[in-house]
Length: 83
Image (cartoon, rainbow, N blue to C red; front, top):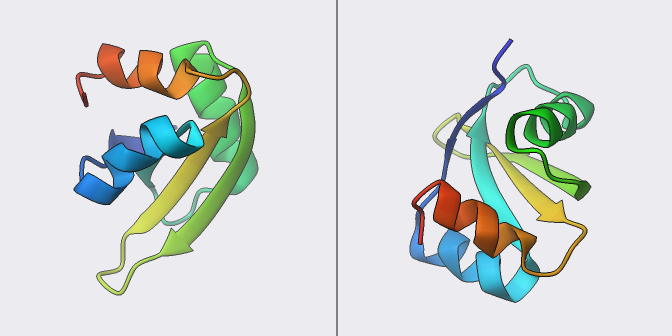
């Protein structure tokens, strides 16, 4: 099942790519942190350090995915055409 829907491209989310080595994804409401971590590692062939989630007031679930290697978020963001 696809838990990750798309990467968020707001100004704050894009700033986190370089500052925190993380990318913000919009994910399925029923997905768990383990599901999100496994899918990102499988789909994008990268190692994930941690996943934080929150549900917005609009009913969307955000996942802040932090990567292990420095600069890995920027590399993935350029592949996804975020930056």
